[in-house]
Length: 342
Image (cartoon, rainbow, N blue to C red; front, side, top):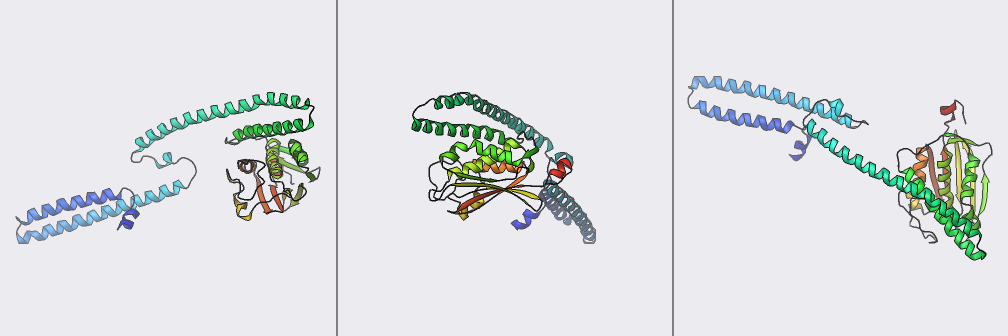
């Protein structure tokens, strides 16, 4: 019975209650008149009851069809994107719904304003902290003790990476990333990322093998693409293997109308059960990591979000203890922008 009730159109239950009330009233009148009517007049009463029941049934059927059709229309509208209140026209409790929507809209606008203020404050702080950080780098170069200077430089580099990560993270939380899509030399982007991470690459004795043609052109935002590459290179540094010589290989290949940029390292690798969750927010993996770096699980998450915004696909494959390979797919969008192919 409960299943049948749940399948009834919304609002039809009230109609059934109204019909039931009418039947009760009709039953009372029938009992009342049966006491006073002669036997020959009771046939007229039965005929009248029959007409009323048929009319009531037709009315209920019409209401049911109307509500059912309305329910189907609403279900179709709910599958669409955008607002549907104006499409429906007038409906029950529209004023109440509008009041609540306006109330929540005001609350959301207030929260969004507070969120923007916080993002502006963090962005301003990140820019302002770069000045004393640069001074720290200069002061570090004056330290005569090589070991102390190296240790200090390492910590300053980590702080610099964290500040840049916080700055990018703030921008990446918005709907628009200040994208500036244009014609970019892929090799320049790769070299920029290597320069950003050169201290840690040298410190960990990485062999860097870049096999990207000098005339390799993609359409992207250089700043954001370099950030994505920074995360992949940083990931290679964090999980460097202690059993093999560190290697970072970056290659580019044309395949099926797409340009594939692969960033491969011979580090610890990723467990097969973790592959699907690598780009999840806050996921740090369950493998036996070196423990040298504390991971937040945000770097690859932001890299995947930015790559998606740039309309580049990013994939990962790995064999635990052997290698990890990230692939960025640049779709053939040159024709879309300038009417020419890759």
